Length: 283
Image 1 (cartoon, rainbow, N blue to C red):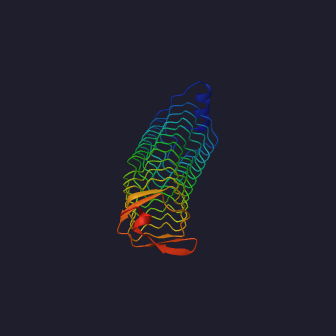
Image 2: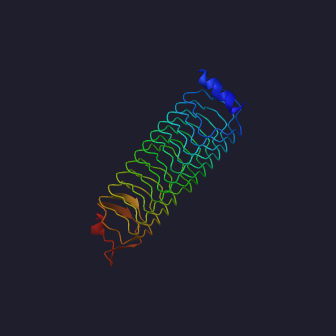
Image 3: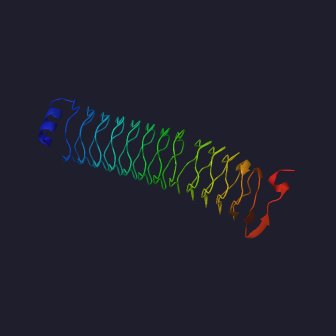
């Protein structure tokens, strides 16, 4: 369909364009508010800076589609294919993307606040500086995704997978990651204040320079974790496994530590000293 025909039908009040084939079409800056594009084929289309607010793109084909800086708040992308799509800077507040396929997509600087991303696939996606505050990422696949400086405060992460994810410099305040497998994850410079990582697998995790005020690490496996220059004010490490942990130059003593097999030293204010049973709260 030609763009002129599409716009003419839209201006005449038509809103149902389900199943339409617009693959490869240039729709830059187009306004299609509240339209039905379910099952539409938009593969490789240019929708840069388009206005699609409150439209339904469920099960649509959007792989390689350009949606950078598009207005997509309140849109439905249920089970849509957004593989390799460009969503850089897209405005997607309150969007619904359960089970959407976004592997390899670019969502840098996108605003997905309060969006429903349950069960979505972000494997290998670029999410640098994305806004995911209060978003529902339960069951999402974040394996190998880049979330550098992303905002995840208050996000729901139950059942999400994080293998090889980059969480450096992220805002992860008040999130629940209890029992999650986070082995080797990069949290350097991240802000996790008030978060719950009780029982999490954090073997080899990197917390260099991270802000960990009031974080609950109770019972977590922190073997070989690196806390160099991390802020541990009021941090709870009761029952955590701390073998071979690097705690050099931490900026506060933890509030509670009761753990086993500690094989490291703490350096604070350039004065090294060893852990003691009294300091650890055992014995």
